[in-house]
Image 1 (tube, one colour):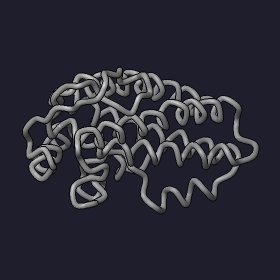
Image 2 (image 1 turned 90 degrees about the vertical axis):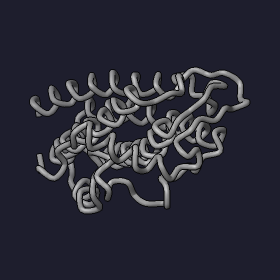
Image 3 (image 1 turned 45 degrees about the vertical axis):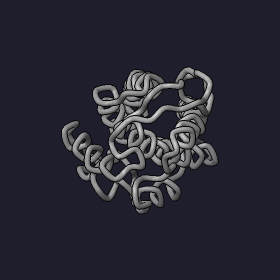
Image 4 (image 1 turned 180 degrees about the vertical axis):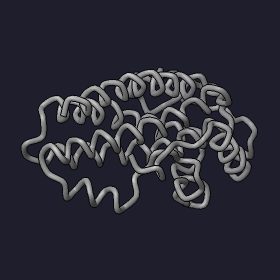
Length: 206
């Protein structure tokens, strides 16, 4: 695996969130929503009517594009021929799980009166806060690969991608305030850790 995709320390991610949070619409303070309660796993676009802080905001703002890239990677592998069925099944599972979560987090940000993009519209991967993101060159390599080679590349890239998501989720678990956002972070951490092991097993078998 390319060394440039090794995940950063939790402290580094936390520092990035703290800095970015200073520029968020919430000003690092708390706001309340008037939306109806919803669980983080329900697929609803609304968070519970509870306060949120800058960590919740940055978690959603960063995880949306992170999830979007995982869905894009899954779409790429699903369009290919001669990819092992277990790998395509995993790609379908990732897409099915993360697409609704994007909608949920987008709804939270809107209900919190926060931007659905990272502060300033920057790609947070350039600031070292969004771990595991693939570069444009990585995506081109995945797009060009075929068959078993494509499957191996997809698995290796997605392991790194999941590791970055888990790191962001752990920061939210430690510093978030909104109960639905924290619950989603816990679900992401648990589910993606299991998928990492599944992908390692698949990779070893190819």
